[in-house]
Image 1 (cartoon, rainbow, N blue to C red):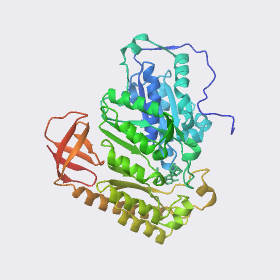
Image 2: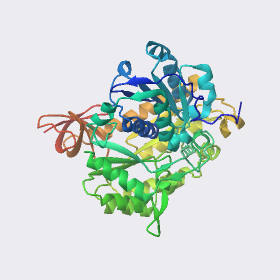
Image 3: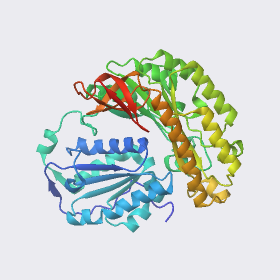
Image 4: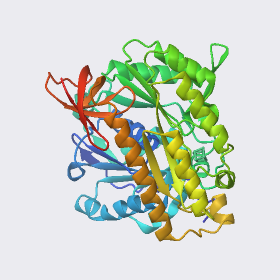
Length: 449
Ligand code: 5AD
Ligand code: SF4
């Protein structure tokens, strides 16, 4: 079977009569990271272009796109179980279209259709760029889309109607080979979108009401591309986008520590839209484990970057990722992670239990030898520390007046990424408010206007 299947392949035409669809609806479910959410939004756009409308419940939907994740087994299991539950959804209205996309789709390929015959199309993460053509073909083959539905739809449809924040993917794939990570095999090597495309998409989103753009890429700050006879690197891209009229905030996810440079720091200083928040994935504080993880840095080098950032950008808020229970991780290794985090003081931590992924170097060459209860216990200790640091950071904000971009009614975020709920004042999504912080819970600032 291996090698015979390419994700994105669909079954040969059945010559079944076309189904007439009036006002068709699409529902998107994402089980992954922001990249996977952005990919599924891009896929949904192909449906919107054909006259589908979005934002409807699963029950009312004619088509569902499921964006799957395979970074950890748990994420994959959740997506697979959801696909299984859609058996009865499809049975109720057999004209419905079920598309499974993303990283788990790339990894599992034909196995998904073998196990779930109610799935119409499997399209892996590497095939996202060809998706719109595949969708157009399948929709024309399967449906008569009533003309009125297309005409009803606005010119620049967006998936996240009403939201002030949106994503722009600037690169896909990863050229690193961290031993635990399945991303390079399911997403392939780095590919960059052109500066022109990124600017066009950013401008279109701003024209439709977006105020804050998050640039996305697996190692987003390794971006480079040729533009007007020059090589544009990530800091240059920040400078170019910063000049776009109407953009209030510019963020990005997820940077790689290697590309956190002085040039990037200068762009932070010079560009008023660039938010002073940086996610810097550590993974482990033990040099022995970092080496086995193939992270290409030591704790000392990482701390040098943290110190440089803190001295150059005193208001910068940092967050991080950490993995506990990597093969052979000892108590001493884990203690090094804890001590490093105490010095690093990230405002929040995304912590994960090591999950061996098929085909990765660590899963093939190292034993998954940290027992599950030990992984659990280390995760709990790391989370306790994260909560402690987070709580102290948030408490430190009480009494300050902060600038909040309203994302949903009564809810928004500060420029440095803290979530805020507040009372008083007129509410208006997309507006920037000045809010006095009067209290803080573990992960939320409470304010008044
Ligand atoms: N096991 C546990 N966590 C993982 N991550 C990536 N691969 C694995 C794995 N096999 C985590 C890393 C990465 C984040 C997106 O997911 O911390 O930064
Ligand atoms: Fe995975 Fe490492 Fe690439 Fe991040 S940098 S996506 S952890 S291989």
